[in-house]
Length: 416
Ligand SMILES: Cc1cc2nc3c(=O)[nH]c(=O)nc-3n(C[C@H](O)[C@H](O)[C@H](O)COP(=O)(O)OP(=O)(O)OC[C@H]3O[C@@H](n4cnc5c(N)ncnc54)[C@H](O)[C@@H]3O)c2cc1C
Image (cartoon, rainbow, N blue to C red; front, side, top):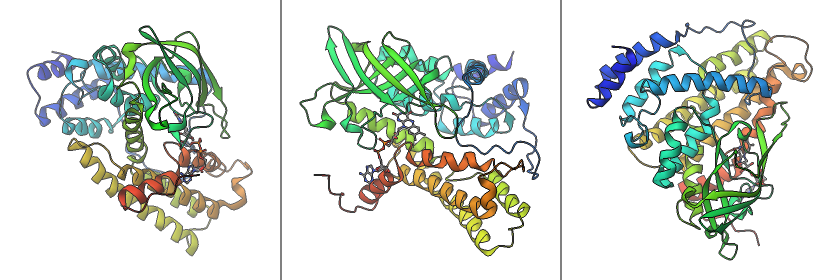
């Protein structure tokens, strides 16, 4: 019996024990992927890329997507794609312990990046599962988790970001369809997306939070126009998306008509969990990179630099524990709460500490490319940090949420 058949049959016969599941996962990965060699960081060797955003050409992006898709399909068909998902929509119906085992075992192997699916699977798919009609769940969830289609988040508009509820894109009912007109902006990954979760204004006469409705929109539908935006790091991973008389079937509603704010909050909570859940800062190999950078520049004994590096490592550990507490809450079946804002803020605070440390270490060598390995490359990191501080809710907005909903401080006065 092949590994794939074994994985399927153990699932069909009931949930496999964690030991059997781990053995199946290892057998599948041994047969389909290469073991990751023990990673040791040696200054001056390998890639010195530390960029936070992909800087690919469109051709590279399309080629990489094909590789990611082929891997996602192989993993899904073997029963490891949507481990905790409900079986009626293509999931395997197993526990989050099974999911954790897969993540741990898979980390030992070299596999293609799945980052292009991050928004679709981390934010859009959970919202579809929570709020869509059965028709939409059946039409999209399995294909999203199998990597057949990519999803994007169509929330922000030119005048509506932090104040999302002020958005203006209109959806007007016409028979058993809705007609969409308006503009979204900063839509990550729209250039390769097949579907999008969009929030539109359906009743301009209601108070702003109450006149909104969510939909799943086909990104290939007539009237959808995606225009890439080039960012200061050089790449173009965001887009403006224009909607002109785009027709969406009534079945593609998310939640209730004028209940879009609840739908948006589901997505935003998952977004903060996805961004903040990464361990709260640099991973250990990147901390190692920073320490080696200080050594290479002769700054390892500099008390200011040593203090900066220590703060980064301490924050990284503390944020890691906070995230583990939040993840335990999610594993226990609770919705990610405002503590996710804490995770996101810790992550960006450490990014700021990192670029301050890098500036102390390299000084002017950061702004002119002298060809020195691991030096000018940090510019990409520095230029990416402002975007990370804004994406998924800016630092200031995160502080407001923590102040009001975690610390119980009075609400900030609304602008007059
Ligand atoms: C990397 C990146 C990826 C993104 N991807 C997507 C995506 O895929 N889909 C999508 O829909 N959007 C996306 N966005 C947009 C993002 O959600 C918005 O940029 C964000 O919500 C901020 O909105 P804004 O840009 O309109 O800024 P504004 O809301 O205009 O904020 C401007 C400044 O005012 C501050 N501010 C605003 N309100 C308050 C307040 N109440 N109290 C204190 N300070 C305040 C902000 O902190 C900020 O410094 C992305 C953005 C980035 C940077």
